[in-house]
Image 1 (cartoon, rainbow, N blue to C red):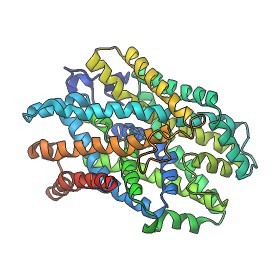
Image 2: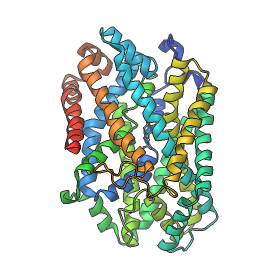
Image 3: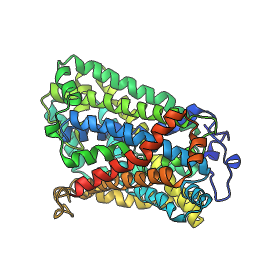
Image 4: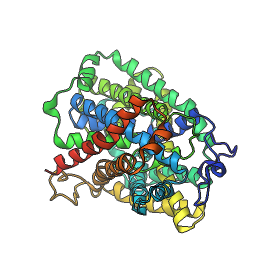
Length: 470
Ligand code: PFF
């Protein structure tokens, strides 16, 4: 993946590191694989279907797609561009570019938002990753075979009500992430993305193909793609926007970090669009698979975060070779979550190395332990604290547990805020000359992006925020 065969050069960014010293991605494909590894994860397969189900389907999906196009892709281009322009870790790239433009280092704030978001997201992301780890064993031992929806639901509630099991699986998942980050060796993993991501896609296709025979295609397709705006709430719009950031790994400078390794001759627009299209394709396919199963079995689309764990096993339990496919599916899901988890921890570790002068092992351990401990709070809010809604007095947050609040606050507030700052930085702070040089787009395409990042993106994010406050 990187110019350095050990792969570790990819993340050796230091205060004085120049691009030449840090090594660059060996090709456009390498960058796309790494960025896709970060983008495609639990957000696509676990979160997209359940938030779509909770927010009424089609209209929500339409807003989400608009957000990807109007907010997500332009911001991804901006992040990659800032990273490549700065050629350092996000915090230092922002500082350097700001200094070059004669501005205050306050823009480093974007990097700080990223570090905070990384901590909070990874803490609960790892708990869900743990569910997937636990489901590998459940699928492999044939426990889904021939089971009813009730029995499958009971397996899931059994897991949620067991804090010790949740803690064990959360620990296993986080350990997987920490080992890779501590060793700084990612080349093998990114190469594996090129095999395992298509495999995940094919497995989803198999589930869709199987579920299509249930005769629920019309209802599932209508639910996903026929917008009924009466079902869309104000907060649904915020969730769609937040999910666009979450699923594309935007707003916390991950793409900025990756962009700093992108060779100058590679098109930022083409690569960003490719990553976004793959990411969206996986989400829509997962959504289709899940809602086919939901409607064929008379399940509740708005079942919440457990949705995929209560629907997919049902299909695996019914189809031929279901235990094998089910096991494979959860293994691939862990892999997708793993590469995303790494990209959540990486910025924190890099920041600790740079700002606090810690070595990689110590920073990984330190950051990992904090995420692990924070994860316990999420675990408890799935069982012992399930009725505890700490911000119950705030409208819109009435019934949210700590777990829900962490998800809500990071995806719907922190990431869009980070993205808003990125858009303002790219659109209003950097010189037009620098942008044109870095993006090397045709004149009309550049104008389209420039108008979007200066006006449309920040106004859209601000409008959704204000609309929700009001
Ligand atoms: N994009 C990942 C997913 O969809 O699962 C989650 C994620 C990774 C969010 C990295 C943010 C991030 F910086």
